Length: 127
Image 1 (cartoon, rainbow, N blue to C red):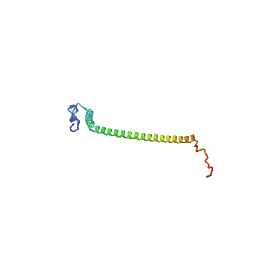
Image 2: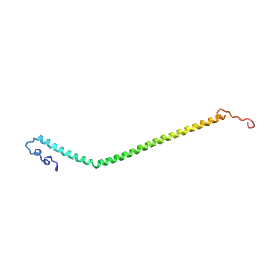
Image 3: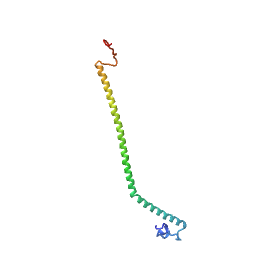
Image 4: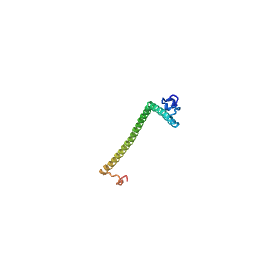
């Protein structure tokens, strides 16, 4: 395959254009097969080249992308967990405040200091 012409590359005498046993149509078919063989060989060489270094570079790039994606996913999960935890702490502190306020009201009521229902009036010297 030195100069690209199939007739000169082959050792088969039937592939020569000057052969009287081969019709013109058969010669065209043989030439096309020879070109096809050349193209398949070129494709094979290119695939062999691609199966070496570039695929390892592609795999390295994909591994890096996978690590970055995993990091982003982890950070997102941590952020969501932090928000949920903060909301839970906030809700618990509100509940504790409500319980303390309710407990203070109950304590005043138990001691007879129900401030909500009493009318405060002053009698005596300062009235």
